[in-house]
Length: 532
Image 1 (cartoon, rainbow, N blue to C red):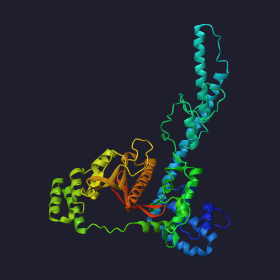
Image 2: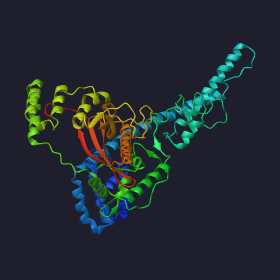
Image 3: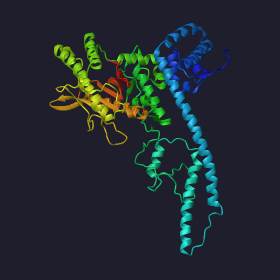
């Protein structure tokens, strides 16, 4: 490619190289994910997509910064050897396929609406204005009934006509402050937020032929966004700011929060798309490796985010003893090859002879062998079944110490937290907590969690909302502890079907809490006798 030729993706590549002082292929991909999704090629395999963008990336280097070509080419090859990039490309391909299906479906739907709208608009306009509706002078009872019928028909026709006329052009609704004000001012008629069918001079806005409830502003099918954000965000530097490698992390975080506030006031913050930005408004910096949004990378840089995560990670040195692991493997093989009873007896004997098994999940393994079936049950468990049959056993075995820490699945509010659920049914109530046993009372929450059953594991909105709730729960618990002059870190987990992600939240500087992903436990949803 010549330097004068503007190939696909040239503009975003040029913008990236001009705005950055250091360059990374991986960072470029994260920052421009949305553009990469929409720009061809639409390859069937991930390596075809990667090869296309590698070629474009190298061409841009040769055109824009030729002196750095050899060094960046070597860096590019090193980055592409990382398997994490393969996961990135597979995710891009998945989104491309989903968009293609939605586009095809939307085009077909719009064609149907267009043809139907034109047909019925003409037909209904003729019914209203033509001679097919004749107004008979009042006099007889039959003429009165005819007038009532015609009046009702005319009203319904006008209402339906407005709906069909606007069906082609009506865009997806979004919840804003303005629509909320309209809801509060609308009358309590049959059609909230719609014009009176008998009114001649009303605006032909979006009409719905079915009643909609004003009690639930988060109705399914609507995109929930946040726009009412306070603009009072502290921006001054402080001696208590967090620094890493001579970089003021607190200052960059304040700029990131300012950007989130600006985005909230202009376009709104979507729960599914702006989870990190929403939590930043509560002074929480979310650190999940390989899941940083483009806005966050733009303000911090990928290398700095990874450095912050390493700094905030707790120093763990947990490793299962090889001898203990071999005991568990022999027990599982005995269960699969002989019988469950023999496996239980073998493990019970080992627990009695080796005290270290007690502190290394010996009773948990014994309990699971007693209760879990050999083959996967085809029916996916509900959220309650997932908790009672599986998750409760794991969490209690790992964390429950009746004289110190108490595991609970509460049905009451969390007194430390001010967070709210949209449905109002479980205000301030997490799914899981661990409390300190103090003077025979469960107080001072140190661990919170949210659970999603297999049936809802693909509900992106619920999963993102639960992550927001976990972050706010954890922050409120830290604040409650600080108010009692106790400096602690709070743990949290999010369980989605058979995967559990663990987080730790800590107050690192004035106005800066870090919520770091520290571990993940997952099990295959297709177990077999070969897995032990």
